[in-house]
Image (cartoon, rainbow, N blue to C red; front, side, top):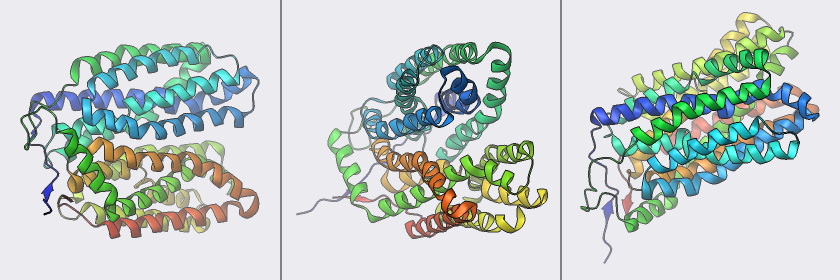
Length: 414
């Protein structure tokens, strides 16, 4: 006889402790992304000159870091489900601080790759995915979107804050001392916030008096997600969208310059993507009160496809370029907010971090590999072929998201 149950939804409301954790994670995520990821673009040129290495070789170190983070997503997710986030994120922030210091002392390209691979590992321990797992465990579905939004809105300004700050530090101190300064900021702020603020939710599983769900329930919940066709449709949609956003993020400046726009204008227009990602998240949070999340996200993905399709016609003028970048930018960060909401709604929170890790790994891999793949297209079809690929990816992502449906009911665990 088959026994059917459902993934238990945790009865946590959050309370003052929960919102303090949200505030702490908003700050640590902003600093984490700013120092471990966005600063790299500013340091790229000075590092290449100092290490006597090509820009391509130095860029490859960041790609290696991102890919390493993707591989770590699955074991990190399992750890979070079993032990919570406090210890992992504290150790991760301490190690990341040490790696920032080590980064400032590299003298060969091999040393740079070693440090960046380490940063990829620690990034998986301290950035969005573990932060989301902690929040999902603390908040009920009605308050969870607001908590997630708070973190992503604040962290959405990481590039806006840390790219200019890093540039200022490099100009006055040089890239090595700039990294040491960033290491101090990272260590002084993130380590105590992770160690002193993050706690396990003050409740027990609804099916067990134990403070954490039984390991058997976690395995069953994770297995149920893996057997659900909608999980893989969602994965395919997010892989396609992640590839599209990554390609535009890397190649937009080059494309606008190729259309005759000045480099300063191209960089400013590309900088809008970070601000617009926050706008898109606010739109999602407001609209979800009336429409399913998947419907909203599919609509935004479609707007992105139309915007990219219009670029060859519109980007020849400044106004047209801004309009098309704005259209694409609305969806630049929407997936990071929609994904935890969809996963928690459909699969519950028992094995949330494990399931999210299985999804994060291929999506992050696609984001890392897509710009390199796009670079191989440019000599053969130019930017027209690249934009066609991005348009197609956004449309496929929209279709996939509609196929997923809302899925607010928990998947039965058999």
